[in-house]
Structures are given as C-alpha cells and as structure tokens.
Image (cartoon, rainbow, N blue to C red; front, side, top):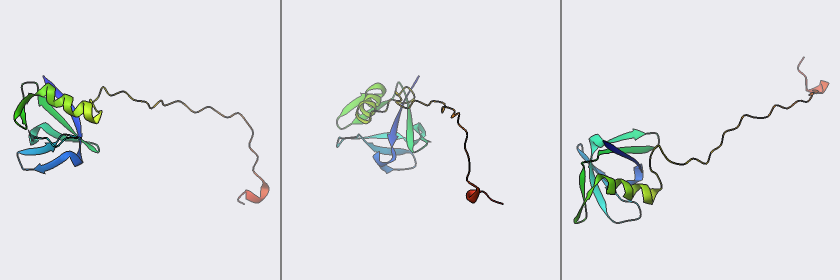
Length: 107
C-alpha cells in the first residue's frame, strides 16, 4: 500500500539524481526521499511512499505514516481527500429585454 502527500517546491533543499532532501515545514529537520517516489502534480509535488518506508529525521527513524503526518498536519494538505470550500453554482438566467441604443449599433 502507498501513502501519498503533497509538498511545495520550495521545500526541496537539495536534489541528486537518486534522492531529494526535503525540509519539513516550520522545522529545521530534513529528510531524504528517493526521487522515484516524487512526481509533478500541478504547482506542487506529489510524494508517494510505500507503507514499509522508513526515513531518518534527525537522529530518529520515522515510518511512512509518521512522515506523511508531518507534512499533512503542518502544511494542511492531506492529498486527494482535502476538504474544499469552493462551491460551484450554475448562474441564474436573467429574464429581461435588453435594448441597444442606435448610436452604439454597428452599421
């Protein structure tokens, strides 16, 4: 099973061909994540790590769920299940006669 979360591009501290050093938001801590687990997703990057993944943050080892929670809780982005406040409604049809003055009409 895979755990997904999103990061901003400015959270990438350093990148090699094989891995990226990602800084944890509002923290001085950083974690290396293999590049194969990171893909572009619009203006953000989507990180998908297997649930067996273990990463070192400082002197502690964190599992995939702990890593995901660090980014989701701090950044407020938990992936596709994020709550949206945008409500899209159909516009109301206006039932009124419109008259164009003669001086504005093209001949």
